[in-house]
Image 1 (cartoon, helix red, strand yellow):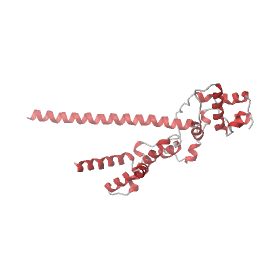
Image 2 (cartoon, rainbow over the protein chains, first blue to last red):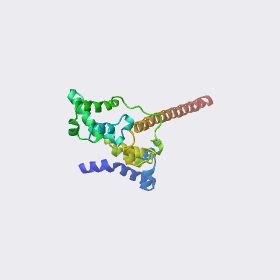
Image 3 (cartoon, rainbow over the protein chains, first blue to last red):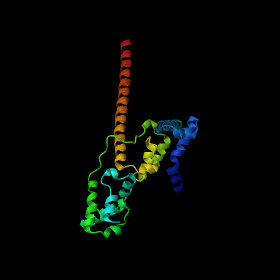
Image 4 (tube, each protein chain N blue to C red):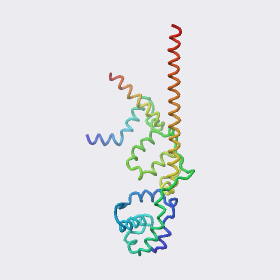
Length: 55
Length: 184
């Protein structure tokens, strides 16, 4: 549990970048170079779609 | 080191203190509630950090010399004022990449110690991290002061824009409803 917490703390943002790259069907490095505001928008969209599909 | 050499090494104003020295000074333990002796100890700690001389070496000086050195640092009792311009130009919000944001999340815990990394990541400067550490603290302060003003202006502008768009949307909806009522 502690290991998972530490991994999430150091790499969590990179995991999110990977999720966004899969969603947008583009490279991970493209997401890393995109404006942070746009990536936040994509992440919010993914979260809303996940919530919608859950219900 | 002689008192004269120490005096020459000491800065005369905030402009002569680099970011690296400022970071080092911020970690100096200072006794704020002590007596006159604590005050002398505090001065010696600061003088040691700025000159490189050890506290033991400084303790061997006479009180007259210590007071001479301490007086040189009186400018520190007044906060530094930002200048009108800075060589540090911060990126616009839209130009900050996701990678930059991740760097920020990793350094924000020790923000003062990592200030040079923050400046390298978030400004358009071509200076290296080492060169940034050698910048005068007043230059760094001015850069952040101007960045804060720019950010506040940009946030205010975007707030006004968003509010205006919402009002226009509201008016459009009311007009459509009015139209429906009239044509009924």
